[in-house]
Length: 464
Image 1 (tube, rainbow, N blue to C red):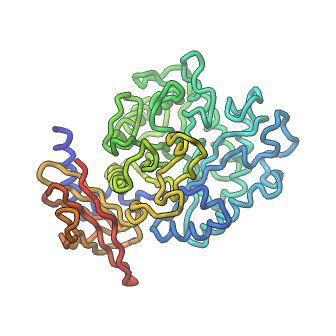
Image 2: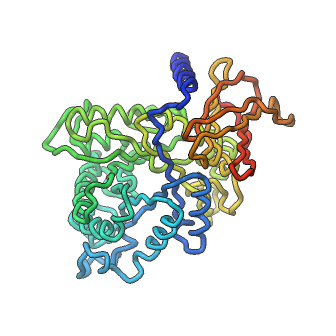
């Protein structure tokens, strides 16, 4: 109860400020739609759709295995891996097309250099994830930097290095091994990008998955292992300080919602971002990483039905907005994200769990039909109940300046939505207000664009 009261106090203070949390005024939104963006048939349409949303950055995973010659061979091919021209013909074509299309629409591209890797680039050459050779990765990073360095200012090294799908081994005889493997890969990637003339760009470290399991190293344990710190964040061993431009994390939550708090203190979901910033502060104080490093939430989404572990389509829209509000209100968070545009295609399987074993976090269903989250992404509205009040936060994503929105309210389902209030946003299109709570009341946002078109968000119920 004390926690909820303190949150309400903080929210009321934020809503009283015209700038609505000025510390987050430059926070950016990143969008990830790998299928649509790398498919020539859907790329142009998808880029325009993302731009129409008001998003100006996309994230792309550069899987080393997909670009290297003879990726499944144990024998290393003879070629200059630092030279992008020495890679197979057409290796870069889809990325080239994406950069051209993105530039034409004023969209920046963030590249994440990651595994799986060529078999010949691993220590024992048995698979595509176990102990990649840092020297080989340095050469690959140099090649990518030479190819795209003049068009990229934000990079990150490795996708979810604390997960066995991307890096191994995670554990050996119960001890976490992936953190130190990743440390060497990050430093190698940093050297490679510097060699290609990109030392001044922002380079993110981490890209960690949110929760630990017997196969996945928990993110805060991963940070300590990577930075040579004990459980009290005190130095152990001889490790030089790492200089990074930010820490990247994937703060996925569960169907409980964005305010979910995992029991394991080394897990970090969107509702407990303070755990991550506290860990980074302690690591900075210990001299192991850049002090005051910013947090980039580079991958996030809410799983919805038909995933048996997902929430309803209506709740997906509600939870996405609450999660974005949490991120926006945190001054250390420099970037938030949406993963995906369309759900993964169902697999051919008998059980529903196996059939929907991918990601159903998109704004569209796999069949192309828009979910409520599609309209809500343009006009996100977070509503949470605190005592007798509903606290609302939202934004007009396509608006780069102050604008007016109409908040509509419906006392109960079946009744008409009526105008509750007209409110002016700040210069980032952000607004906030309080309303008296009524059971079953729903809200929605209505915005008239400069061209006269009227946009409406989906009905939103306040979460308790």
